[in-house]
Image 1 (spheres, rainbow, N blue to C red):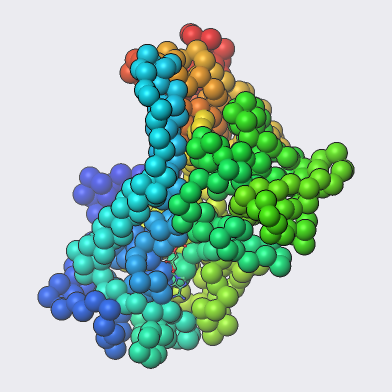
Image 2 (cartoon, rainbow, N blue to C red):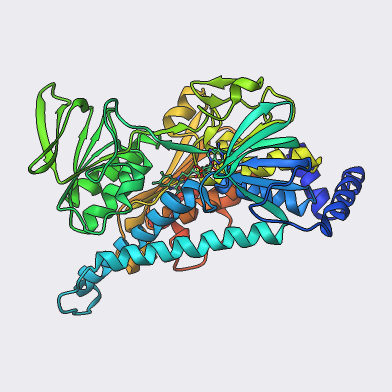
Length: 510
Ligand SMILES: Cc1cc2nc3c(=O)[nH]c(=O)nc-3n(C[C@H](O)[C@H](O)[C@H](O)COP(=O)(O)OP(=O)(O)OC[C@H]3O[C@@H](n4cnc5c(N)ncnc54)[C@H](O)[C@@H]3O)c2cc1C
């Protein structure tokens, strides 16, 4: 059955507007702003319809959408470039480097393809240069989008003052701006272990991206997406990698079988994994060998580990400490901002999205979709709230991980009569062609109605494959729909179709 929001969305797509009054409002707004001159990085004491604080994927996407709806919008960014963590020190630079790691693996295993190469050389400074060029190109793209959508970009540090006012501190002083609505999108920063400060040897996601030499060895504390991706990348570049994880398994938010498979492949590739291991922050010291630490391992014994570099990847803290929340009614939970389904905070007219928000995963696509929800709500447009169970997770390790919905354990704990369909990439012909046989597709379904509860993929381009499952769940398709969906041959997508058939024991190739 179609949900009301899907139905309303469909009506809108076909031009049947239940929101004519809203469209009128937006048209009038557009007329007001269309001819107005936009001065970039120049303060204007004019009330805005919207002030966005922070230009990460959450903030800039929301600003674009606000511009599209004709809202007079300003975006305030403390850094001198737009794009936030994701573009400058997160998603994009890491995926650029991970792509090079993929290529390097192909090059160094070219004999498998029947290609003989004489001594390939990894020119790491050039690798970094390529990564930087990609980032710069896209930062310029974000600037272009602001201009195109008539969003005023103001450089400075924003502080909420209450009553729709925002102070912006720049090199030349502080000015107060006013807006009908304010969107907090100030993102997050890497958590450090107590007593440690990042530098050239003790690294966060920022410093590690600036290295111009591949380290001989790397210890990583934390096995979430960030820790695992850097581990996978540097291991393929030839670094001896050890990952320490306090919990019993790596990538702990994933389905247990996915964690197990990643650990199996990582170990096969030479990555040392210490789960159930507690690193003593006070033991971390710079030594002649690099950085030394002591960890209590799962067997209860304390061991000393030294590596050239140490990466701390133990999660990200919301940037909410100095932004003036105390001047508002905005409520927080351990620093994260509490919002309702429309991204509204407890302060009227103040919304929050992205990494600062309590209760949703810290992912770029979550931030940007929350922005769409907030702006749609402000402009009175048809949007529906984020469904926590339809947020894809993507980890760009080798093999990659893509997941959506409930894990098997979560589905069982929720009381579902669970049916599992699983298909290994070892039985998929395209995976053979790619030389990428590790992993599987796992479907978690409800036995009673064939409802798709979750899909968990580890294998070649799993982070791309997962989109099919997300679309299926968003369209409220059932296992049967996916069983009769035709997948082109030979593709790795066929493994997804097979896994849905496997729910009823009907996979053909395994
Ligand atoms: C190494 C790494 C890899 C990642 N890879 C992925 C990935 O592949 N896919 C994915 O979905 N997610 C990934 N993430 C997570 C992703 O980067 C974040 O979820 C995303 O950036 C959050 O977006 P945001 O808009 O909430 O905030 P951010 O991107 O953090 O942007 C916030 C912006 O606000 C600015 N700001 C902060 N305070 C103020 C202030 N008071 N005044 C003015 N400006 C301010 C900051 O300077 C910053 O530019 C990764 C993260 C890391 C660290």
